Amino acid sequence: MDDDRTPFPTDPLRGGLDPQALAAHVRDGMLADDRATRHFGIRVTAVGPGSATVEMAVREHMLNGFGTCHGGVLTALADSAFAFACNSHNTMAVAAGLSMDFLRPARAGDVLAAEAVELSCGSRSGLYDVTVRNQHGERIAAFRGRAHRFAGRAAVPLPS
Amino acid sequence: MDDDRTPFPTDPLRGGLDPQALAAHVRDGMLADDRATRHFGIRVTAVGPGSATVEMAVREHMLNGFGTCHGGVLTALADSAFAFACNSHNTMAVAAGLSMDFLRPARAGDVLAAEAVELSCGSRSGLYDVTVRNQHGERIAAFRGRAHRFAGRAAVPLPS
Amino acid sequence: MDDDRTPFPTDPLRGGLDPQALAAHVRDGMLADDRATRHFGIRVTAVGPGSATVEMAVREHMLNGFGTCHGGVLTALADSAFAFACNSHNTMAVAAGLSMDFLRPARAGDVLAAEAVELSCGSRSGLYDVTVRNQHGERIAAFRGRAHRFAGRAAVPLPS
Amino acid sequence: MDDDRTPFPTDPLRGGLDPQALAAHVRDGMLADDRATRHFGIRVTAVGPGSATVEMAVREHMLNGFGTCHGGVLTALADSAFAFACNSHNTMAVAAGLSMDFLRPARAGDVLAAEAVELSCGSRSGLYDVTVRNQHGERIAAFRGRAHRFAGRAAVPLPS
Image (tube, rainbow over all chains, first blue to last red; front, side):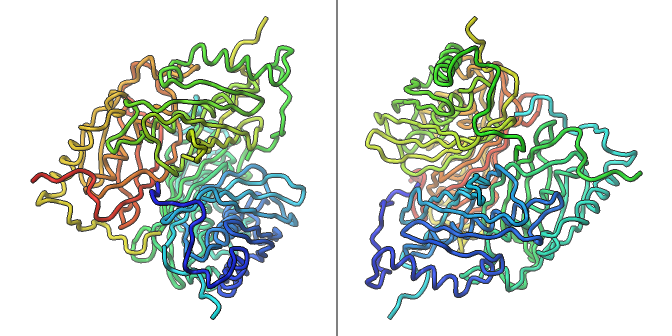
C-alpha cells in the first residue's frame, strides 16, 4: 500500500525528454552495463513508459535434467522485461519480489518473448505483470514483479 | 490442496535404496543431464529426503545494470535447490510456480548457498522453502516453490 | 506445469448445457451451500466459462485497527470470484494457493467489485487473475489464484 | 531490496518500553480498534518483537460450498497474525502483499492457530512467514506477508 501513489507520477529526472524517449534512454543506459541480460542473449525489442518486451532463444545450455528450459532461466527472461519496464520512468527501481507460474515447458530452439505491463506505479513501489510466450503465441509462464522505487534517484544519468 | 498427501510417501520407485541413498542417486542422475545448473557453476553440496543445498559464486556475467547479481540468476540458484529437493524421493516433480523475495543485494565474488526444505509432500503436489545466504550467513532471498508431482513416474532410472 | 492441458477442455460433466448455462448452474449450486460468501454479503453479479464477477460493500465490522478494510476480507472477496470462475466448467476445483498485492486502501461504505479471468485451464490445474476495484474504478488489489482440478468430479450435481 | 535494513532496528517510538512490553502495548492498541479481528473471533495468544500467534475456531458461517473453511477466512486468520507481528516494533506497517498455500482443508469445529515469525525487517519493508495449524498440529497453510513500513510513524500512541 503506497498512500501517495499517482498513476503517472511527474518526475524531475526526465531531462526534457518525453516519456517514450525517456524509456528508450533508460534502456540504452541500463543495457550498457547489464552483463547478465547480454549473457542470456536477451534482446530488448520494445520499451515504453511502464512497459518493455524482451526476447530470447532457448539454447542447449539452458536446459534442465528433463530436457526443458530451466525455470530459473525463464524467470531471468521475465525479470529482465520487468527491470526495463519498472525503470522506464527513470526513477531507480529494484526488484523487491516476484512470482512465476509455469504453464507450458519451453524447449531448445524455442524463441520466447516476455512482455511487461505496469499495473501500478507509486512513489515507493510498483507492480508489473509479465507474460512469456513462445513462437507459436502460446503462454509459457505468468510472472508478477514487485518493485521498490527510490524517489529522486535516477536509474541512468540524463543526457547533458 | 492435496487430500491424500502423506508426510513421507512410500514409493515403489526406490529400487531397494534407503531414502538418503535414493536422494543421492537422483541427484547424480539429474546432474548428468542438467546443463543449466552446470552452466551457472552451481554445485550440489548436500541432498537428503526432501532437502538439498547448492552453492554458486557470483561472477561478472551475472551482474545487472546496477552492478548487483541479476534477480533471475538468484532465482535460478534457488530453483536448482528446489528441483533437487522435490525430486529426491524419485517421484518426478516439476515446478508449477515459485515466489522470490529479495532481501539484500549480492555482488561479484560473493559465494551464495541455497538450502531447500520440504514443507509438504503429497500425491499430486509439494511445497518447498529455499533460503539463499551469502558467505557471511546473511539472508539474501527467500524462495517458495510449488511442485507438481507425477505419481508412478520416476525422476531418474533406478540402478538395476 | 500440466502437460496435457487444453485451452477449453471438453468435459463430460455438462449435462447437455452450453458453457454459459453450465457456469450459471454451477454458480447456483455453489451458492446454495456457501455460507461464507453469504456471510460477507458477497453477491455474484456475473459468471461465464472461466470468469466471474462478485461485489461486496465494506462494512464497519470489516475494518482493521487502522480504519481500512482488513486485508483478509479483501482476499476473501477476490477468492470468492476465483472460486466461481475456476469451478465454472463443472470440474471440481479447489484453491491450491493465491497471492494478493494491495494497491489502495478500501474504507467503510466503499463498494468493491472483483473480476476473475482465466489465464490457463488444464487437466490438473488452472490459473486465474482477479482484479479488485472500488466504486470509482480504482484498482484496489491484484490477486492471482492457483487451482487444483479434479478431473471427472463434478463441482455440483447436474440437472436430471 | 531495502538497502539500509538492520536486523533489529532501534526505534524512537518505544516510550521507554522494552521490546516485549512494546509488542504487548501495540497489540492492545491495535485490538481496541480492530473490528474485523474481533468479528472473526480471532484471539491473540502471544506477541513478541517480530512475532505473534493468533487462534480462531472454524464456525459454520465460515464454510464454503464444499463444506470446508473458505480460503479467504484462512487468509484473514494468517493476515491478522502478520499484522500484529509486523507492527510489534511500533513502526506503522501495512500489508503490501501476501501469498498463501493451502495444504489441508479445515472443517467446522477445528481450532486453528497461526504463528507469525519475522524473516527480515528493514527501514522500508519487512517479510514475515505465518504457519497455520489445526488442533492436531497438522499444517493447514503456509502464508508469506510483505509489509511496507512507515519510518517515524507509530502504529499506536505511546503511553504518556
